[in-house]
Length: 539
Image 1: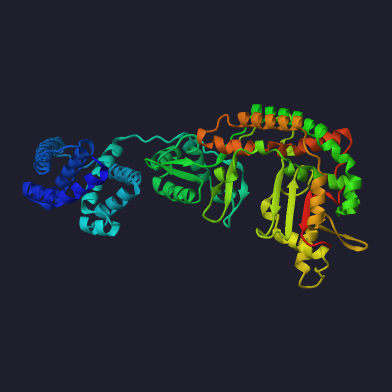
Image 2: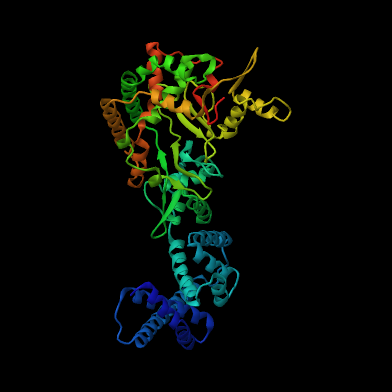
């Protein structure tokens, strides 16, 4: 029988069953307990049986059988109690009695915490706050029958739990910690992964439910923490898209959690070095001859130093590669829309020390873009690498900095008390530098649509051979990356492997430095290197 129909029948028979129980037991307390037993038994039968010739007589037949069992068990318990009392008569309470009572009470409270939220509220209201069934039903907007059924079921759970030996899971003994947390996409008003998973408890919750979904109780047992605290954390994580509630009250983590592996990192490094060299030889080598054409366009770059410009153009140009077959998965298919307006894939790295044959920090890269989200009159682009001497922190890459630079290049940032804070910020970031002649812009500036179009047209088109190799690189990266991750995150991992060529910039830079065709940024260029300002209006 369908649950909805069974609920309707239970609702109808709740009052008659209580009347039956009261008639048999003679007092309301025992009547409520017996009625709960009857309702539970009837409900169980309804859920597993479809056809009933006479529903009314069947229900009362079940009621009579439950009553008979109830009396039998009650009589047996009474005899056992009398036997216990007889065996202990004439003896004073031992010195450990109060301790045992306290321990039992503590265990009971622990087991109440392991009940579902609804059952916990009902048990506390009924037994601790001494509220009536009717009052509880009204407060929780439930039927009285549902409240009675929950009380009966909760008692069974508590009895079982009191006898059980609860073990703490591995995370309760050896909790994990995230070394780094970030995102791919657009963070919201409340921040990103680092903000939502700032506490060790939340980090362990998402990790515990990453490889397999778990209920609140299972999470609680794994972490060795009361379900009451787990519930509150899970509620927020679910609300903001870091976890998803599956059927059966099981929660599954919806983010990428990477576990450092020396063998995997070494394999990635070897592969990236190979393809970084290919990318330079078959594509970026052509950039060395672009200086005259770029000067003709009139793009501004610090000191008209072409070496400085290359540090920006090399990573910037790759976004214009025309390889549509590399992007089979659209962002909306895997990006998680957050309640605070964020739209991103959350990523975390476990804190697990590994020894590598190379300096891992040398090969990291972070791309950040900033615009107004509308007409893009001012657009900022920046990539951070080992050679850019600044913190790779998206929070410190502000749209207002690019607006300030726009006002500077258009002559509208007049130095005064009003603009002092803006100047201080731009100087601290070294987007502006002081010279004997005054302030100077220290980033690449593309002024107007015409300059931007001419620049894009200068970028060479990748050959068919290179396109094929880069697609091979993506596929190899995906196959290596998905190992050890749960199946429900494979599509997201495949998306992140698309256009993996962008992660090759540090290897391209290293290859060019080794060949002597690129020089490291000067001391005055390092902090603002690889930063591009685009303004729609010309100078």
